[in-house]
Image 1 (cartoon, one colour):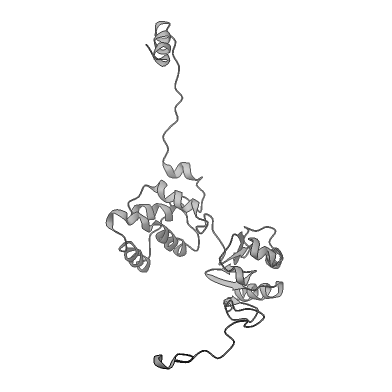
Image 2 (image 1 turned 180 degrees about the vertical axis):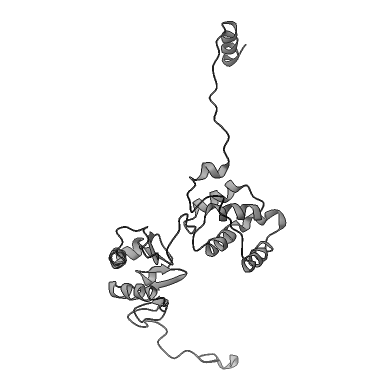
Length: 245
């Protein structure tokens, strides 16, 4: 018995019926990936500095040769840091060539992880967490304070002087010290409106305030003080049976 597909083909061929096939011109993957701009296009050269090239080779050496593409994330991070905090198409293409990967595979990684910035950012990259624990501790006020203090209308914008970019992010893993924000690679925790302004003002002056809790407490210790391990710790042999002393 003939299949329906074969029957239709024979019917069409005997009656001169034909169907055109739509086609499109071939385009390179980077052309499909983004629209080129004056500041972000494949013609802008990029290569690792001498120091970063040495670092990249050291990173790749941790992987078997057939799996060196696994180094794509640390190498993209290295390129982003060299490229003033953002990952341009030239950075991605360079990493793809360095790891002998199809460029599209690198694009897929760079667009999946929010740690890679696809647009230029300010000198100080401010990431304010607004996930539930921080929200319950007042992160909305912290975000509004930062935007107002830097004269920005919305998260995701950069100040006119190029000193700050402020974005809203998901959990940064410092829930016990909420609300918090990340500036560069450092955490600033236990924030209030006043301490948020103080931290931002320090960065605006070219200074680097001390990271960590801004409330005076040490790391993540209970803000009400110790509630456990308050007595003298046992010494060697204390409370042991005589035969074990």
